[in-house]
Length: 153
Image 1 (tube, helix red, strand yellow):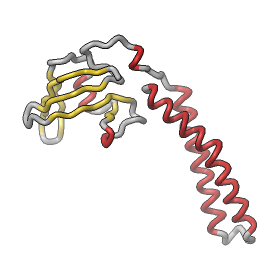
Image 2 (spheres, rainbow, N blue to C red; image 1 turned 30 degrees about the vertical axis):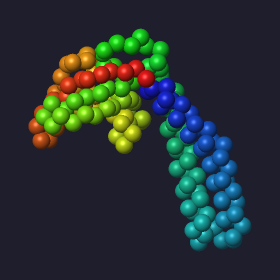
Image 3 (tube, rainbow, N blue to C red; image 1 turned 90 degrees about the vertical axis):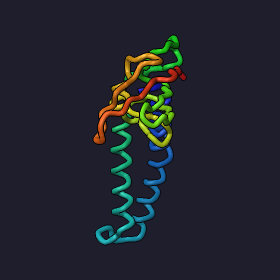
């Protein structure tokens, strides 16, 4: 997990424990005040939300306890693609330029340019240097990506 991903999980954990827990507890108390709990949809919805929140808290705590956090800023920059590096690529077939940051599975978000270290593209690039070509297997055949630049941000 990157330092950025660890910080985001810690922030979510803090939010869920301090703010969301209190809001859910208040919603349960308000729903109880409405009377009969057997037919009280608000009460059941609040209890379900409480269960989901507590489950997510446990999940985050487990991930943080097991995580090996890598701060890419503390690694000496080089031309080698590693976990946490940001890679600028040129697709050989179309000439399209793309840029991805290689992150842990929980941090991956293609919309923000973050791909999982377990993704086919990342697996094809890890260990390669600037100028090397990575072959990525897709359902439509192989795609070649030439590594244009590697940044350790």
